[in-house]
Image 1 (cartoon, rainbow, N blue to C red):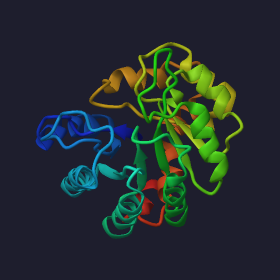
Image 2: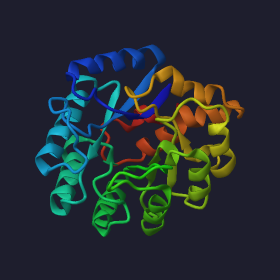
Image 3: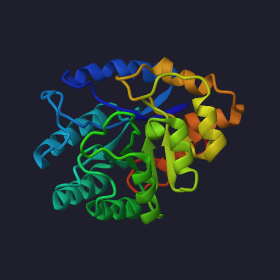
Length: 265
């Protein structure tokens, strides 16, 4: 079994197209963790979404959770720039609709103090917070968070499990930045399939802190799986990355309907 912690609905297409990803999930026995960062009916840029857009995004995720309960878990997406609405949205989706985590993208840098209450909500429900992070040679997006900001957030909230999406973009840079942050997991999704990158992460932070993600449909499942299967690491390390590390996190949440699904396998 595999857990893919980084899956999006098809942007600008019907949610029915998500069935393509379900076909992959069934073929490879994958649990998909999905989150929407823009409504499929409005493909334009939504880097600083309104509370109404946020609700539409999370409603899409809820539809997929209900449609594919055997395969799909959802993270709630919020814009911390709308602090009161963001906290209310997160608490509702976790407490009432069985979402299992928080997704943060590029609305505001993650060192913004408006994230603090969101992190405390995650700690209360024992769910992870997945923060997009990317170290770029060119300019960052306006609210984009490089790895050092995510590390600062993790140090400020040691009770919260934080997932550094894309492992920082530059794996070598991210591995060094996150080495001392024990509450940060590194999601490998979204980069090209470069030999040696997963081994770099394991060498720096250990196999217990690396988790599998694809960034589908933006990346193909086989290319992202190859990062792990082709890595020069032990077989049990590959099993941890593909399943056990994220299963441990999901099994500990207060919100998931059937935590036993992720225990004892």
